[in-house]
Length: 187
Image (cartoon, rainbow, N blue to C red; front, side):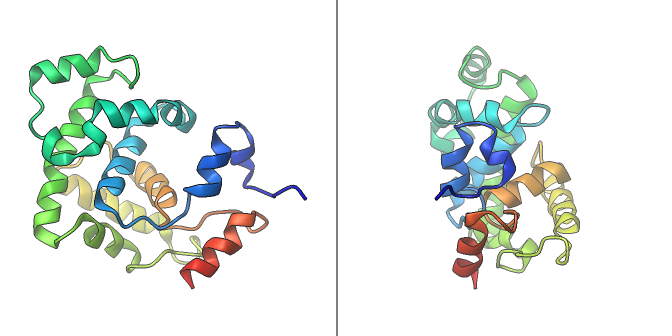
């Protein structure tokens, strides 16, 4: 029997494993949260498919999103990144990862973990009915607070996509086989 998936996941073969194994699954690992926030920011003005195709290269290029290493990137490293065809070669986006690393480490120091900080926007548990639980408004609050803390490429739309990706919001369509699995896991 064919699995029913969210329609977007059926538009490209690369989306299927991402949809089936990652999208909407709650993430509490700081490094992975930092990675996803930056990848969602890299997507600005582009498609998720573009970023998904480049994800492995992004990981290698940015030291697997180790913020402690990223904050020490010098001008030579930045220039090398801007010449790297495996990532989006946009100066603002490259600089944003570095600035985000500094802000990320400051949040970790203040809250004990980025996980504690970021999940507070949804009360520490995934929102299963995004519309009823006002997830868009929560993404707007998240965006505003992240910007205040020095994060870049964290507009409300990016924050909402991030919330979906890391399982803060379960936006699988009701007929999608993942919707009920994630709802059970979060119950």
